[in-house]
Image 1 (cartoon, one colour):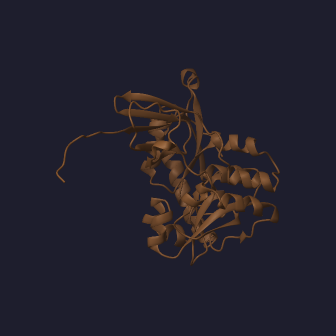
Image 2 (cartoon, rainbow, N blue to C red; image 1 turned 120 degrees about the vertical axis):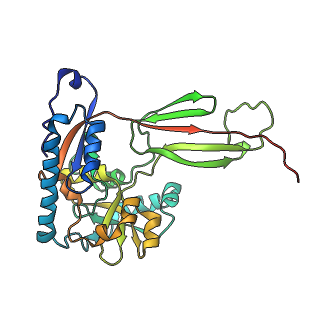
Length: 317
């Protein structure tokens, strides 16, 4: 990778920053420039022409790869799990998190070749990848590798919650996996340590939390290509540690309608590119200095605002 040439005044260096690793030449150029404008730790005005030239050079390089590596994403190497991972996989499949997350199509867990997986996400947080590498360490055994790809329920980044108004609450976390889940109706007996001022008839919960952080991919039945759906930071970390194959949930689709159910919107909107282009972007491209670009960015957090409205009125029966 090559670091950004962005100048770094002392005042800017004092601010908390992260490094973001981008795949150049694929996303619309304006999206890349908007990201740099909004989140780079310093102003990019002086180096905007250089950023554009680098992106354009990477775009031309992808055109070369389309000729020299045509079809490289087809028929990915997928194998059965090692015996040591089988009981761990059975335990994961029996859990409610797995059942709720992968409830649309039949799934299987296999050892997949990481480097040739097609990508639909064009940047990862370099800082987080380094943290994951340190967490796993070199030469992980079967159990450590499986738990890295299928992390058990564990404490994630801390969450801050504050009341932002009489009917508004704000949740804040440093994790990119932080999100709103769903509204859910609860029975009164599901409440713990709540001291009601009267009899409770029912409870509406607005659930905020983390996604199922499981390595998973969508497979095209015709080409055998796998598009990585979730687990980009973990896959980058594994490849940099020299791990070439890892356990992954595979959901195979046979139609556009099925793709709409399980894939990210960018894939569902343009399936021909990801599943049929001669040489789409691959996970191994993140390590290619002709394509990868590291930007120093401001440290950011994810905030989720939840509000509600109550109306009380009479109706005729």
